[in-house]
Amino acid sequence: MDPRTQGRTMTAIWWIRDDQRLHNNPTLDEALAWRKKTGGRLVAVWFPEQPREVVWTEFPHPIPKLSPDRAAFELACFKSLKKSLRAYHIEARVSTLNPIDFMETLQPEVVFYTHAAAIHERQQEEALQRLGIALQGFHARNLLKPQQVFSPDLPPTYTPFRKRIEALLGTEPFPGISTYSADASPSKSLFAHTEEGARAHLYSYVSAQGAGRQYKTRRNGMLKHSDSTKLSAYLSRGLIHPQEVWNRCLEIEAAVGGCEEVYWIRFELLWREYFQWVAFTAVSNLFRPQGLKAHSVSQPQKGSPKAFELWTEGRTGDALVDAAMRELRATGYQSNRARQNAASYWIHDLKQPWRIGAAYFESMLLDYDAASNWGNWAYIAGVGNDPRLFRKFNTQKQAEQYDPEETYRAYWSGQ
Ligand code: FAD
Image (tube, rainbow, N blue to C red; front, side, top):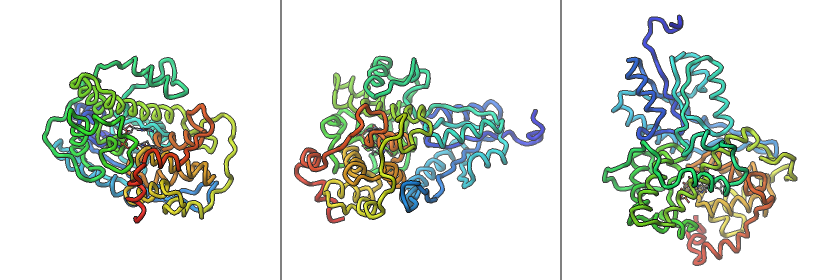
């Protein structure tokens, strides 16, 4: 026995990351199995992102790492989890230390954690390995395991990735995923902060009568809650496993005799999956001005604080972009269509450095996910996984096509 641990109760840590759920959580399952086997103590610890400002070389002012609203949403999710964990007799703590200092001081027997995709979180995993503490990591926020993704390697663009994975997975559901059967009504707010709320929403949206039956047709709508799944924050914070979403889609597709509309949710889930593994492979390159490109790309050297102010406040004069940016400020959310236009406008119309826009989205989005955010921004900037170097959206045309009655623009014009 390690002399440091002699004479004290064995302790394991569940390092809570973006896997904040009880169901379909292999990380928690293994931690519970360890407790049962050893009779040791299991403590769950969450290390929230601390409010701070980040200085970027291409911008004169620092940008907050996370907004008060995002911090409050993440805290609310944690508090719900903490409450649920009482039923499992697991003490859940918040620590403002960094995970490495915390573990070094506590010296647990083992740390159970869910692997992250992006460099910063992966560096934490590596630092933990160097401490010599036993670690058990799980891919609990992905559809796929690395051996499925990298066989033989990650395709350079999305379509070959999707085709290969669809052929691999077929229409068999992921095994071992429990389903939700309670009769809870989904939350009326944009995002619930409970696992129960997340699951209730999934099973009501993706159901024989649910709005998901028109997902493909309606997903470019920007105004209504039911225009798209609104699962992003649940997936980002890990309130729900993507495999459960996948299985639920398959179940409804089978029940109604096939449904292209619902299938498209799985199509989009594969975009999420792709960006996770792109970030995993790209390590720090995803966050460079030149992104994934091997050579430097022509970029504005310094961003304009005035342009930033107009864009973030929704005062650029472009009605679609302004609506999108006001929505982001007010709710911490934008639809995918709105995000594409807002990002394209920042990069290609205002001619501003893409990383500054991405950093602002990072601070504001309740569903912030490093891989999806930075991957999409790099893609639109032409420095990501896109064979095209210039992905500019014509915001006037987009407004006419996707907001023909001007309802979205009108809704946010007075905010
Ligand atoms: P739906 O249209 O219902 O899609 C279903 C699910 O598929 C989503 O919940 C999401 O998990 C996934 N998905 C859909 N589109 C994408 C996409 N383009 N890339 C990756 N996953 C996708 N998504 C995040 O979860 N976090 C982010 O930080 C984020 N930042 C983005 C920044 C930009 C500039 C852009 C263009 C997109 C970004 N996205 C991000 C992707 C996408 O816009 C959101 O996932 C989606 O709008 C969330 O709404 P929804 O759940 O109703 O999506």
